[in-house]
Length: 130
Image (tube, rainbow, N blue to C red):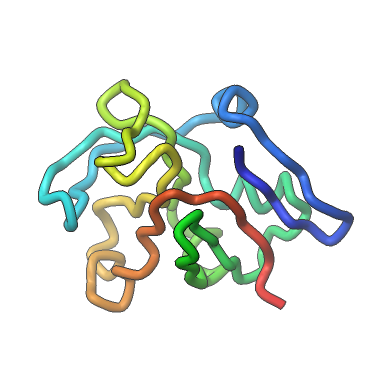
């Protein structure tokens, strides 16, 4: 389950509801796993629009207590996604799933140390930065 904490309340989306949204798919290297996967999921841009906070910096929260901020200028202009499948299969816990933020292979700036924190695993909530 994913929670979108918007200005009008919390929207809870099941995996099935996420899968019913327009999907994006691309291959990219998961640096921590040292493996390339073809991920499929929903863009953060679409999720922010659904939550009513598109264009605002996002705070992405994981079930293990980790959180990070993703700038609006990045997710509004690049296909950063919340992935729910890798190579056509559900993302396992060992692969940092079931929901994980994935950055595209290009532009290269998204694969610098600065953006390493954007790869949030075990995502459970997204909210606009207050």
